[in-house]
Image 1 (cartoon, rainbow, N blue to C red):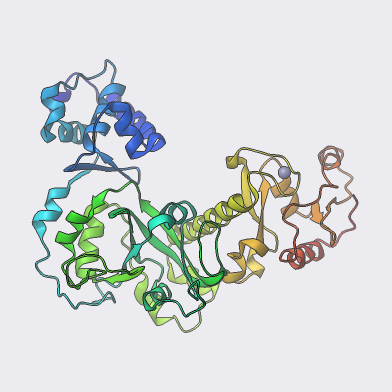
Image 2: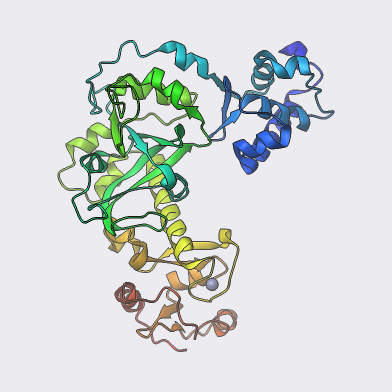
Length: 425
Ligand SMILES: [Zn+2]
């Protein structure tokens, strides 16, 4: 490695790596392949920035961002050795998917259940077959199971497993005959209306997840070597049965998650405490059992992402209070009622609990009560003696709030009363 990279300094390598990763995240795995002219790597896969990337394409990107660019000759770009040397050289973890094939499924009991087997590994592991819902799930960080089938009959038995998912559990997202992502459950199931992007019955259970690794392409032929018949969703012929959610025995799920994430998944346990305190699930408990600040902030982030994506899908990229069409990164999912006054299910009810407000002022002005929404849906401003603030407020007010509806009217009233100053148009 020293001889291979002798001509570049540590900082040059670091810079090239970070530029290559920015580009890779931006383009995605297939885009990166296309740009550097490679097919899928069937063997060596880089695990970086929460993605899987083909080792050849990512090495080529690193090489191209070195100054002067590193020539990847056909000799060292065709075989695996050179590309993994490039990755090693700049400190990008990689995995060899043949390792999964060769590891077989030796010690797995075919009838092992997905439930935790020991205090040592107390989290649950889940296989979720998603088909066309995959991109919605990853974008929103949501898993959704309706109560009823489309014909009104009770949901399939495996759909009920969504109620057994707990914070800290690991989810493998399966679609198009591949594992495409790994996520962590951040919030256990709450009763919720169907999120945008899903089909089927309107009422069901919503679980929030934090995608940890995306852009995976772990094909079914590899998965078959890891999941023997009878394990997870595999039927007696060794193919995935028609199930939506299947429990995976920790003996299979734990090493697989660790391997596919190159050890990057947060592995602190919280499930034991969760299970013990599960009797009544209120918010404080949820956060408590997540135990760490990291888990708490992950929860807040997952909630914000879910609401924002659901609202964007419903309303488009327009501020509900001033009506401006704005870049998505300037729009925030703002809670109408104080977050602390709402139950978890209330908070995740995007139809009633939240609206998109811009970070150019509306979000903060609403939160502080300088903007309110009256019982007819009009945006109103609060009188103020502050001349600067007055100048801002004068440009607002009078717009018909986009998020005003039967579902939100009560929460807007609650907001008005918690800031019960006189308002004006
Ligand atoms: Zn606005």
